[in-house]
Amino acid sequence: MHDSTSWTHCLHMHCYDAGWRSPRTTPPRREREKPPPSSDLNTPSPEDTELLSCVIAAPDRETAAEWLGFSAKHLRHRLQVLREEYEVETNQQLIVLASVNGWIDPGKVLPFDGFT
Image 1 (cartoon, rainbow, N blue to C red):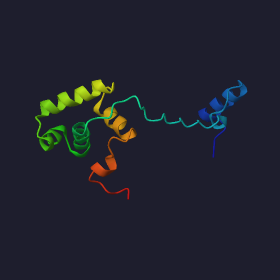
Image 2 (image 1 turned 180 degrees about the vertical axis):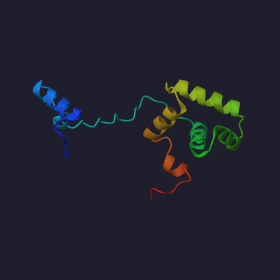
Image 3 (image 1 turned 180 degrees about the horizontal axis):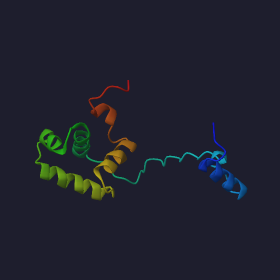
């Protein structure tokens, strides 16, 4: 039950009296439409796809580098080259870009099987 002297009630009444819209009457937000995957992007090589899959599945970058037979420094360099090529700032953005474009399927890479 709301107390008529509560500050939220006073604020709500003040806003209502001033002609402002109540937060309860605002229309629901429209969901953003997903942009279609860009066909302008070059599909990564199978080696780059494997690299991204290992980065997703490994508990850390050092383990991913070990799985790939790289040094951690070489893996960092390859990820930097891929970020620059696809014009993203982070490895997470790179992975999302690859997932959205269908280059990798995180569901097939991750060991967790809780979604099926």
